[in-house]
Structure formats: C-alpha cells, structure tokens
Image 1 (tube, rainbow over the protein chains, first blue to last red):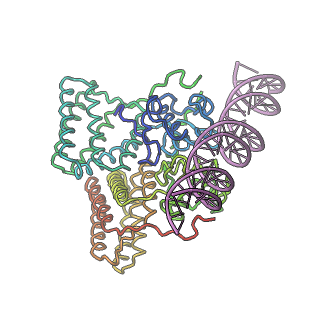
Image 2 (cartoon, each protein chain N blue to C red):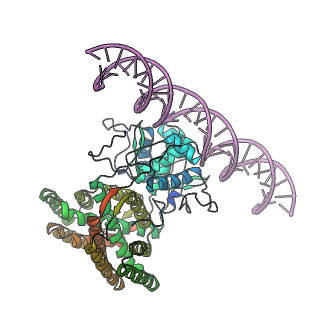
Image 3 (cartoon, rainbow over the protein chains, first blue to last red):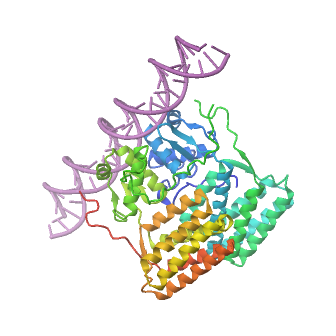
Length: 252
Length: 252
DNA sequence: GACCAAGAATTTGCATTCATTTTTCAATGG
DNA sequence: CCATTGAAAAATGAATGCAAATTCTTGGTC
C-alpha cells in the first residue's frame, strides 16, 4: 500500500478534525476549529511522509515556527502522536520518531492482516450488490494492469480494492484503526519488487482472484482466511527498506 | 550523530495502556516520570470505572484539583483520551464522555472479535507447550466453576483465558490495541446474564471446548473462526446497559 | 591526540496568564 | 407566565514565563 486517503488516524470523530484529511494544505479547505487539531494533522503527515529521520529527535521549537503556533498545541499533538505509536516520548528528553525494527514491522503487518481479515468478514455480511460490482470492476482493471505489467496501475487498483473492502465493512472503529496502522507502515518503503519477482506478482494476482470469488459468494470466514494469508505473503515478499530522508529535513 | 537504539524492544506506543493499573496510588509502583503520563492513566481509569456519566462534560477545573496538577498536563491527557476514543472534544465546548449508541457498541464488539480472532491465529503459531498447558488448566477450572454455577469464578477464568491467548500471540501492537478496545467496552456493563440464560452459558462453555481443541491442534484459522463467532454470540446474548453513575460524580 | 570535567546554552515540563467563547441568569417585554 | 435579551461569570484555547533537566561547548589533563 503506497499512498491513499491519509486517514486521520485514531478514532471516529473522536480526533475531532472531521475534514482534517490532507492537513491545511488546501486553502479552500475548512480550517480546523482548533489549532491543536490542525497541528496534529499537519505533523502526522509531516512524519508519515518521512520528513524526519527514524530515530531522530522531534524539534519542538523549529516545528513551532514551521506551523506558526506556540508550544502548547504542538506538545498536545506530540502526546497524541505518541499514543498513535508514531513517535515515542522520552522523559525530559523530548520526542523521537519511532524507529521500527524488523520484528516490530512483522508485528504490525500481522495486525494489518488481522484487520483486513476482519474487514473481509464483515464486508461479506454488509456489502451491497453495487459495492461488490465496484470491487469487481476494480479487480478487472487491476488484472488488465497486471497483464500489461503496469506496476503503478496495479498498485493503485490493489490499494483501492483493499480500501473498498474496509469501507464495505461499515465499521467506524475498524476504519480508524486500519488507517492508523496503515499510517505507521507507510513510513517504511516495503517496495514489494514485483517486477523483480514475477512469481510473487502472479501469486498475488491469484490470491486476488480468490478474494473476489469469496466475496462474491459472501463467504466470510473463507475471505477472512484468504486476506490474512494474502497479507502474510505480501509481508514475506516485501523488501523492507527504511524511508530515505531529505538532507535538509528540519532546518529552517 | 543520533544514536539509534535498534536492539532493545522499544516500548510499544502508549496507544492505550491497559486500564488495569490503578493509577499511581500504589506506593511500590513506579511513579510516572512525567505528570501528564500519570494524569493520563488516572483519568483513563477514572472514566473507565464509570465515575463520569456518559455524555457528561469533563470538568477540567475540578479534575485539576482532584489530581493536583495544572491544566496543561490535564489537557494533554484529554487530547490523548480523545484519540483513544474514550471522550470527544467539542471545539470551544470542552470534552465530553463519549456515549456509545447501540450501533457503536456492535461495531466495537465486532472489532474485539476480529482482534481475538487474530490473537488466536497468531497464538497457534507461537504458543509454547507450557503456555497451552496453562490455558488448559484455566479451562478445566472454568469448567468446574460452570458445573457448580459459580458465575464469578467462571468469569474470572474466562477473562484469564482470553488474556492468555492475546498474550500468547506475542504481538505488542495487538496487545495494546486489544487493551484499548477492551477499555472502551468496559465502560458499559454488558452483564451477559448467564444465570438467567442457561442456554447461552452452556453454549459458551461448548464454544470454549472448541477453542481449547483448536488451540491444542494449533489450528489457526479454525480457532480464528471460533473466536469470532464466540464474540458474536456473546454480543448477542449481552444485555447491554449503561453504567450507573454515582450521584456525586462530578459536582462541586 | 584522546579523554574528562565544568559551565553556558538550549530544551523540556509545567504553571500561569490572557483573549475569546460559551454559559448562566436576571431583567425586560409580550 | 413564558420567551427574549443582554451583561456577568465561568470555561476554553492558546501564549508566555520559569525552574529543572539535558545537551553542547570550552578548557584542562593525561
């Protein structure tokens, strides 16, 4: 999963910022009601996009200048990001970007697998015929991309399909939690080198055939199984590499 | 030169410290390094234990006095609790205890089911023989409680078994997320009136037999299925009722 | 040249302060 | 009598101030 709708991370409306999607980048967008909500969204994007080196210190002062706020709302945002697992707070020593070891990556991947499995199960119960048709359409588009070896098109459809399944599950806490974990994993590039690994690509495509089939039959527990295995295989095939950080990440 | 502490298992994001620890009251317990962490834990317990009415306003001032801190660390804690989904923040109108509608309850239960299903699947991969033996022991104790209609003993063992399964999954993010959702649901008393519902009790007991059997055979996807169904049935049987709030909860 | 110690400068955590906003509540009018 | 209005009171959101801790710099020693 590369990019996608950057989920607001934690829970339903809880995190306030209803339309905080892509930070305050768009001028026309509704400005957040509170500064802290805006800073939270901006800072989350800033980190997820890899502007701070993993393990690097999160500089309060310079970020305050960058976002044009005082330390209070920024520190509130830091606490929330820590609770989301994106950074860690060292007592009296500030915040650091959380660095994921290989083992933690594996753990996160498994949780993603569990969440997708759940989403698939629920989707089988709740998806409409139209919702299924949309996924089927995406599947065929993805297959076309696969045939013509269009990696980008493939990834886009793939992402869309998984998102639709989560959406079809129609479960707000699930959606939020899924977005949170997706955000954590997005910080690492696990470019599943499909073009260097034709076997995996073909396998993934076959798995997607199974996914569509199970969904068509509304076979919840079957789909659940397939999705978990799908994520497992994806993890195994993923060549994990840390995100590269631009040299002038934080200086002003 | 930023030292990268790769090796040591970094503490999983404080996404949701299990609401188990009873604040920092215990003298032997490690006092939190920062005030905000202490206040966060205390306030979380305070809310989870039902001291604030659902939908009620969270009074900053009186809580500051209660915990003996200024508004700054308290407000930081509020932001985190909002991100955990325990309270909601209304712009310029303070925080309110999140009140769960029936539909949200259902959604949360399903996520719990998904997380337990995942835990079971992973547990089958990782559990040791000793770990299994411990669960088996708990199961038999629980069965004894069932036979003698000891509801309390039954619940205790039941809880312990589910916790052990999550523990056996050996996945820090899963553990944390599970604790978070469990805390949210703990705010509502869903007294599954087993004594008024012998059928359900017997059914639950049979399901636990299946659980143990699947775990013994390390049948991951099977156990996954059973656990999800188990939670579904539990939800259906649960007579949900809001927590009762002590009359003098917040007034001052 | 490497290592270590002491002090300066920065940074963190928290309390306090200030400007808005919301809420309360009594006076007014229909 | 009840709804409405307007000012007082309280609460919120954010900025600033300050003590304690950390980090960086400088100077000295082996």
